[in-house]
Length: 357
Image 1: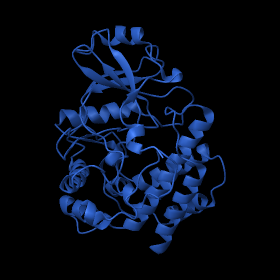
Image 2: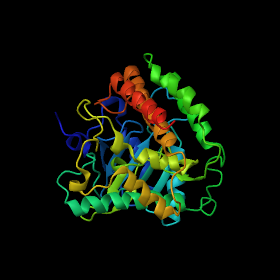
Image 3: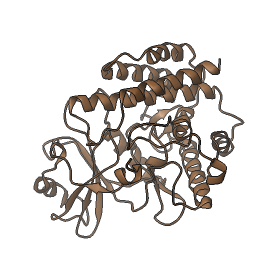
Image 4: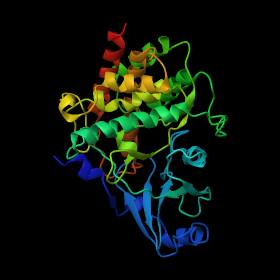
């Protein structure tokens, strides 16, 4: 079985349906982006399933291009304009994100809207147990992840000019409704546990919730680690960022601790069954306790609900990937997920919610 790190690290030639017209792109970027020039190479990053991401290797500098994928897209998905908006606001405030350089909504350039950011040199780890990394460095990397998301949630979104980036009330209810809709649009077969969860989660919605800036898909796989030091330089892939409930963001970042085992090559790795103490990786309880300490609260209210919610949402995300693969609009040539994976994660979510009642 091929290693996830090997499969998803680095770049490759863009597949035909995602190839870019370099001459047309160069004509647009050369006068607008410093140090790129007109004779740059285009490589596609291997990792990711949603918005195609490319490395532009220029004469003096390299940049990253993020675009919407071609084809018919789900409503509200692939919102690169929002990625650009939030990362620009965060970068302007000194928060560690890739600094955007340009946004282009003119689809005639490459066939879809896109934006350009600085290229940050670093490491992205696709294996949750960080093989080959020293025990003390594993501890430091997970602690840096914890600090990053806690610091993000502590930001004043109004001071950053993001007060209109999302609604400030009712996030969990809206998000649940949205993912139920996405599931209905992406469904290929019946998954009874998802049908059950859509009802059960609705009836157990918390009455109150805080509002902060969310990353939306934070985890080790979206964290850029310093090339040599055990610290997070930046978070990648802000497509799902918005204003909303930080406990959902935190619960989603806990995926490695409950990710089911035993799936096809390239699927997400898991910490389930690992000797976390020997690895130097905190338990989920310890990770959540660290977050609570950093943001100044005693505990996460309704934690089991939020864990079940993000497990349900993750199952639906995978269903969306399978739907795109079935229609030929997936941006990754190696779709490792299966329909059985959706059912297994949905069953886990139902168990998480049921055992908390």
